[in-house]
Amino acid sequence: MQQTVLITGASFGIGRAIATAFAAKGCSLAITCCHSPKELTTLSDKLRREHDIDILTSVGDIGDYEYARQLFAEIASRFGGLDILINNAGVSHIGLLHDMDIAEWNHMINTNLTSVFSTCKLAIPHMLHKKQGKIINISSVWGNIGASCEVAYSACKGGMNSFTKALAKELAPSNIQVNAIACGVIDTRMNGCFTEEERQALIEEIPTGRFGAPEEVATLALQLSFGHPYLTGQIITLDGGWT
Image (tube, rainbow, N blue to C red; front, side, top):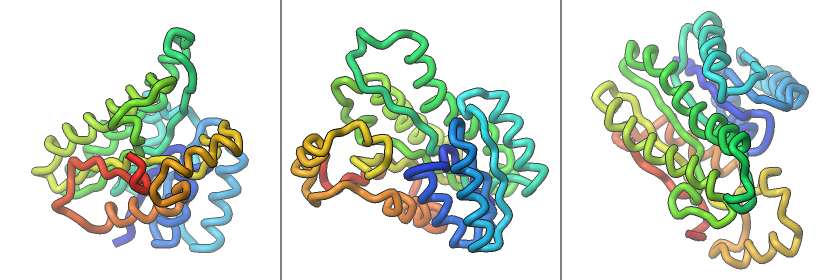
């Protein structure tokens, strides 16, 4: 049976790689972004052309519950519901906590954590009706151990990890699995703030001697989505042995 997948933050990096992987699997896609409509449309056109699949593209702030509600109404109208939810949308903030203002904090919480509440809340009814579903949250190793100068980001990802574990227990009786992938340093534009010297220093800290590729995250997301019905409530670290 063809599966319908929602991927948030799909225009670049990990989200783009995940969308590409699920398109190759023949899934129908709903892909979103907030600030890159041109890139999202280009991706949609490419995947539709290459794989002859149905794709819904949507631009908006997934941290805004009303936008999320409208998006799910479109998904229900177009596809009948959602089988797999991948919460990938996220923003980072590097700096000392005492220099961060409340607007920046609220933006980070809304984008990285409130969005997960909204999409899960809206996806669950259809999954309950079907007695099956997969929810995958793209987290970070900083949610496991915290990072200096990334306190807000660490707090969001730590919250996502706890959210994942708790929701998995809630939904397990209904055959809905909820897991998170805690990424290490993945080679995306989010890490474009690093100088070449800083990149090399990071690489030296990682036992595998390199950054991870977005496609490796996508492969793990595929594996979680199409197998492992007994695996739920797990924070799976993908970091090349770094932490």
